[in-house]
Length: 410
Ligand SMILES: Cc1ncc(COP(=O)(O)O)c(C=O)c1O
Image (cartoon, rainbow, N blue to C red; front, side, top):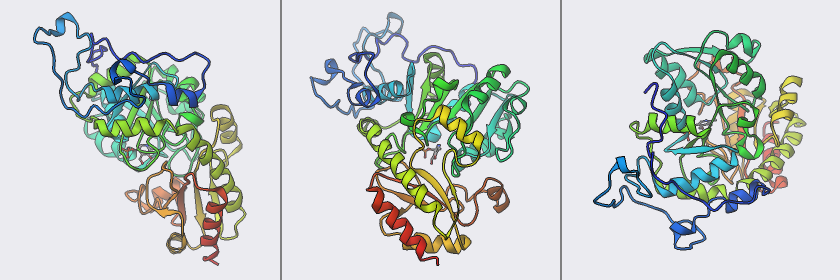
């Protein structure tokens, strides 16, 4: 997997040509109009789903003569992938994007492309539980050294990244207690060490944050979440400069984490309303934080920028909105959580996030259940901590549902 060629696996294909948009259009407009391709679509306003595994190719075809417009096989290229990739590319202000069968497919594919036995990777330890297990269980078995940065009291990034790691990986805001990591500081430290900075931008979305403009080399997403936006698909993405994204494409072609075309269609459909949804989720997040922080049964509220003055300053520099994710630690530990979850009438009790409907989950029982109680506590996850992923409902309705459920704890 290491040191793959930097050529696109689809080298001489002419590649998709989407109708260019004027330079001056903003993100909402780009998401609506950014993947027009009437040449391919018989003029359809909505690009069709290419639900095919393979394609006719001309009998005289030879890769050596260039592929022109020829597609060969969906594990590698599919026009429906290209529509979703174009919207992702534009939303992150990047040269290229590649979609995968899941967020974990995108993250594992990126790491396996750039790391080989003997290499070192630096990772900030407040992470989604699945990503954490990839670093703790899979990579060491392949001979890759993992250096954990404990983010509760982090060293200066340049100290944490000293040596010659190949990759620095972080989430900001992080899962589940929403720490904000200073992208420019981590990017300078990674640059000095000659490492790539890979940032998971799932929580912020490209509406609230574009890590590439703050020094990240690659952005990864669980597109299952806000990008898809309707809790009805599983997908992932890698976004960044063409050279790096193409290396990931080549590196992962035979790992087989290919997105199904129907899921790619749903992803592109979801992305067209991303700005509207995230704007409402930002509002719902702010309203919920105000009300929950004042509730007598709430011990702590985590929300981007609340942890410290440094995190607030970093959030101001790198985020345009703070999002609809928050964590509350309620009275009564795990029994308090059970009673709170049981009393919710609108908010579903489910893991995951980013859909139109609000969800509540206990990280101790779901995303971070594989950690010991001590490890969870060190990360700020208490038995009474609940992660809230707010949807697009009316702010007053959500505040009422959450407040009434907390009142039951009295
Ligand atoms: C921040 C973050 N990154 C990555 C993932 C993994 O994504 P997926 O479930 O699409 O594989 C998740 C899933 O919850 C996540 O929350």
